[in-house]
Amino acid sequence: MTDESPKTRILIVDDDQTLLNMYKERLEAGGYEVITASNGEEGLAKAIEYLPQCILLDILMPKVNGFDVLESIRSTEETKNIAVIMLTALVQESNKQKGLSEGVDDYIIKSETMPGEVISKIENVIKKKKSELEQRAQQ
Image (cartoon, rainbow, N blue to C red; front, side, top):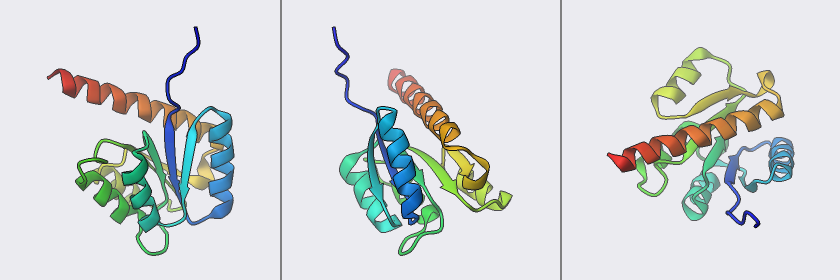
């Protein structure tokens, strides 16, 4: 018997093409379906179109920044329950607190976290979000 469940879909939103490609390759090698976007506007459109299980979201991007994308994701019915991880170069505690208060599921600093750790955090956040949604559905 084979497991034919659909692949977990991850959306990566970052204007750094090197980072996009690196995480795309690592996640696809791990069995994930990966969609990428190079700015916040495109990321929001793809979040609505593809409804990924998790979004890796940079903060500093052209057009629409990560905080604005997060606000739109959380205020849109179709996307409000998607797990969102901010993956950013911003190390200030105030940015982390802002992200957490606005509904991000995790906040990762690029320079302090290896790609393998990011993948583990994605898996943990997806499991936690799925568990939360199942609990809400039972109430």
